[in-house]
Amino acid sequence: MSVSNPMSPKQFATIAAIALCMATFALYWPGLGGGFMLDDFPNIVDNAALQINRLAWADWLAAMFSSPASDLQRPLAMLSFAINTYFTGMDPVAMKLTSIGVHAVNGVLVFLLVSRLLTLGAPTTSAPRRRWASLFIALAWTFHPIQLTAVLYVVQRMESLCHTFVFLGLLLYLAGRTRQIAGRPGWGRVLTGLVVCAAIGTLSKESAALLPLYAFLIEACVLRFATAHERTRHRLWAVYGFVLILPAIAGGTWLLLHSLAPGAYSGRDFTMFERLLTEGRVLVDYLRWTLFPSLRAFGLYHDDFVISRGWLAPATTLASWLFLVALAIVAVLVRRRRPLTSLGIAWFLAAHALTASFLPLELVYEHRNYFAALGVLLAMGDLLLLAPSHAPAQRIGALLATAALLFYAAG
Image 1 (cartoon, one colour):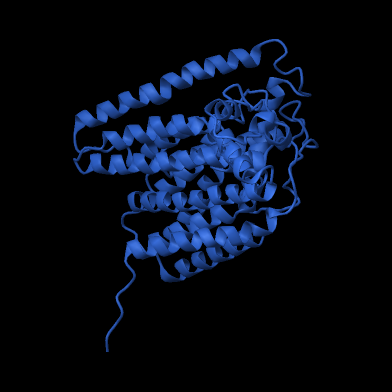
Image 2 (cartoon, one colour):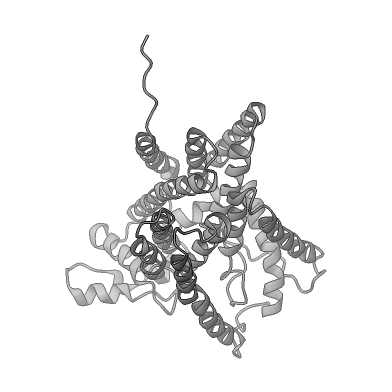
């Protein structure tokens, strides 16, 4: 009796990508109703520069540099809105469909990225288990209700589009580093991922500037700066000095000086110190919302979030910060035994390095977890689907992962 050949990795990836895209559109389709809201109006609806009806270079340039949301004006994201208005006018349905398409593409990139990470971080685990774990993480990330505002709140395409280049950059980086570990040339891919993709991503939103930090954490947790030649390792450290350490010092100093300037917090009902205290509780809530999402907790308004006025006001402030410190220590301690779990924790914390800092921003927004949620789900997938070594534990892990995926999709 003939036995059919098992599905090849390429076939699995192709089918998974197609299914993921179709499922993403099906899941978010009910959200096409409704119109524009809040920041959609100054950036899109009331932005006369986006009312483009001719192919004139000056008009398109004006549209690209017309966002009031940032000093950098996010020209790539604004270009995507201009393309929408040129072809379909000020139609929120068309704009939301475009945003769902961006999210679907990102879901495929996440699947490919996680597949590479699992191959490198869990090489002794069987290939079928890694493939299914990769698919679980990608589906859970794509379907998770914490992504709703990044997908269906039109202006937040800035967030999702910038992460298209973050995911693509990390994929290119891993491709280059894999070649270097094997003793082959890979600097072109490494530098394109670290520098070019990060630069293009920041043209949509500044969140993409964290790409080199995410790549560095891959090195710290998974790759550990392994190379076939010692000279390549030295050059890799030098590259991080130029793309991560120096920009962090220069950019951090510049941002801190602006945040300390008189009037920087004049429009807020909290001080810089109170913001930093409060963000500890915010991050713990983000983690809870990612693991156990509740639609009642989500929304565009979080003005009722209690501000921390001191370490014990409220009492959960100190407890939250102690928990985050403990979480970071866990990431360090499990780095060798469970590198993917360590990376997931590190990615979650790193993703909030800007928005949970001293910057005078609003305290809480779900879309700030667009990348951070991937860290949480990477750790979850590792612990549920890759860590168990015995069949009964593997079945329990698979059941819990399936239940979590259904719970996220139903949310």
